[in-house]
Image 1 (tube, rainbow, N blue to C red):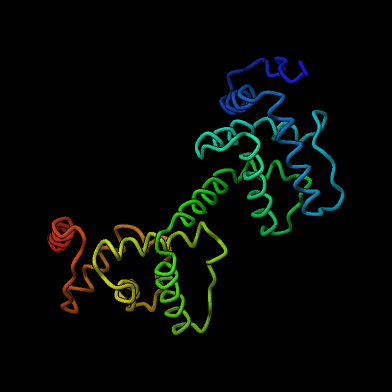
Image 2 (tube, rainbow, N blue to C red):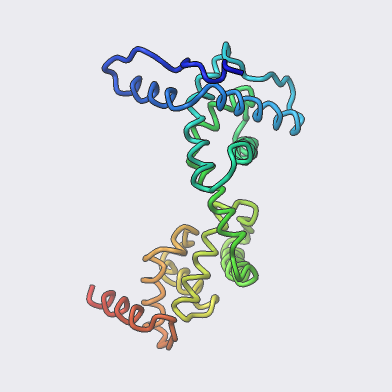
Length: 246
């Protein structure tokens, strides 16, 4: 029991920045946390029925990645107010799920992969939370369907972003922007495509939520003489005037 609290993270540093950074990451993790993370990776891989599973031990090359991963997963737990065990499980589950969708995944090196894509995992879970708290999921799906159908009309190809929260959350932001600006969802999406009509372009989903989307809408309503009723009338009128001045 006492072994988990040994000072096994002491090390000699040199003046190389990358080695110093790596050493700092390792000193922020305890042996107990590292063992817990290794146990959870092992258990989840068994649950997923992976082949040739062995638990990552201190003598394994992947142990270094386990140690470096612990501070990131602890921060994940703190950020989303999760218990350490629940947070570790959620983080690893998302990581292994995303890894399974990568090209030729080798799960024997899953700790390295999860460490490399830790930021992607954080964004994925954050998107999951936002979507679970969406007060108007049907309206979000509506603006998504309008966007997808526009692409289908142009290319004959159907895209699917529903099963990827990191991508689908862009339609939540698009729906909120359209609602705040007082525009129906079809007009909002039409404005995005109209801005790229000169080159038969397709607006990127990440551009449906930013200032670029609002500028495209401003140009579209001016071009078509539309009248909107945004929630924040003053703010929107000022943004239109600023766009015209440019």
